Length: 385
Ligand code: FE2
Image 1 (tube, rainbow, N blue to C red):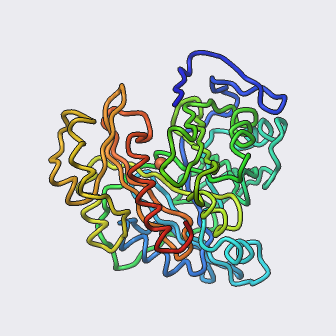
Image 2 (image 1 turned 90 degrees about the horizontal axis):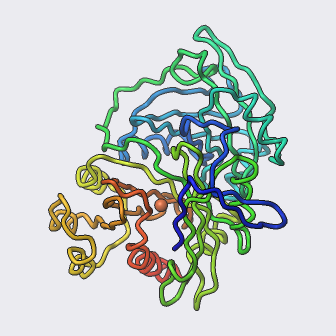
């Protein structure tokens, strides 16, 4: 693993272009605005994310609000907004996306102060436009949006909401029902990982560096991330204030099919592999999510035999962590607790990571081997290893 200090400017060649280690500030981003999934049945997906993940209802758009061809449900938990959208038109872009990819992440929306400038700055650096700057208004003010393409059919939408006071955005009404499962303690999006095709990692790391001004925070090669059978390589790209972190994975050669190839086969191309969400109390979060039916990767009991030696003193009760299958890793800044769900749809594609950081700024490298062996066990059951 190679960790870089963001204050050092060094650069290296990538396909004739420069990739900088220091983020540039032409695209200030305040955080993730929302994540939109295109799904086959948004009404039922919304029920799942409320019941199992503890999201709360926020806003709705559909036939009742004047839309003719689709419906969207907006869910919220602390700083996380999840939008679930279904199309009624079999020929629409949304239906095409669902037919090809299954349920998956279409939009990673980024909260900016100036969506026009975000569009201009990124497209002039080579981003493929998805949505020209576009203003929508209602009695609560105005929202400006613009968008660009990223890996696969995934897009970034820049959302400027400084002149808006409403619930979500124009076109949506407040969504209220009598059903309110309690939150599970999910706070914000820590990072979102993209799986790209073999040979695509440098291209997309370069895209985030050159087009969006991100820096390369960490690089993992196949020596860091490999088990007996599979391997992958990853570059973590981060914006200037560190609120947006996008690791980009590509498969590396292993004895058997890697989890990244399995994802790409089933997603039919590059896409978002996992959404990592932060909590302040992972034992509570995981115990709730497990009780509510979320499946997590199995962590062998023997994993906990060496945890004390590996990570030293931690505040949590190790028996409790073992009971819920929560993993621990330490770096120079502190430690972190983490766990992966199994894929949240039938295709082995998108999954979630739950992470609690106690100082650590890294990604759980010490757990990669155990996690990937657990994923391989699932691949073996699916006959895709
Ligand atoms: Fe992760």
